[in-house]
Amino acid sequence: MPAGEHHTPFGRLKKRADYLRVRGGRSWRSGSLVLQARRRTEQDDRFASPPRFGFTATRRIGTAVARNRARRRLKETVRRIAQSHARPGYDYVVIARRGALTRSFTNMQKDLEEAFSGVHKEQKTQH
Image 1: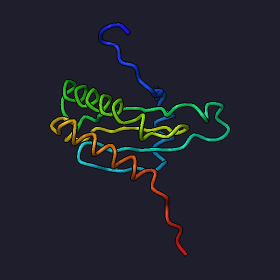
Image 2 (image 1 turned 90 degrees about the vertical axis):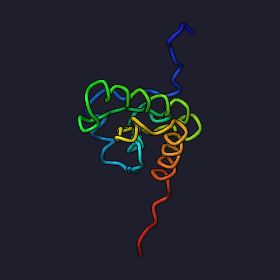
Image 3 (image 1 turned 60 degrees about the vertical axis):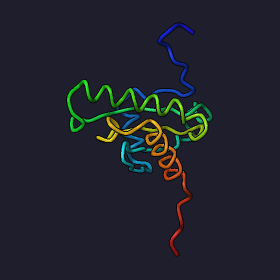
Image 4 (image 1 turned 90 degrees about the horizontal axis):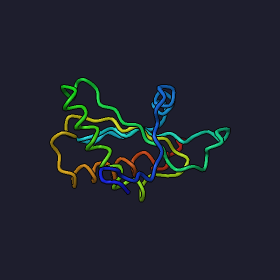
């Protein structure tokens, strides 16, 4: 693999419609990020495909330099954690919070692990 390239074990969300569809799913907030998750529909021919991720950082994070740095840190955290926690057939959107700029990678990894557990926790049915 050439220098500077990273192998990513997941696909990427690139279309606005995909981001909007995931927004209607489950979400989990932590100190450095918000994780949104939604299972792809059975009509989608890529249903059994690897998980896909989208990354975003709003202007509330700061300047373009700060937003790009936050996104890069989130991407690296996902690259380290996703293989063992993300589920095939799911789309995820990772949204940077201010903590993404200052938290250690260890704490960001804990945040993401907790977020994966939270979005995949079985929902209790109310009787």
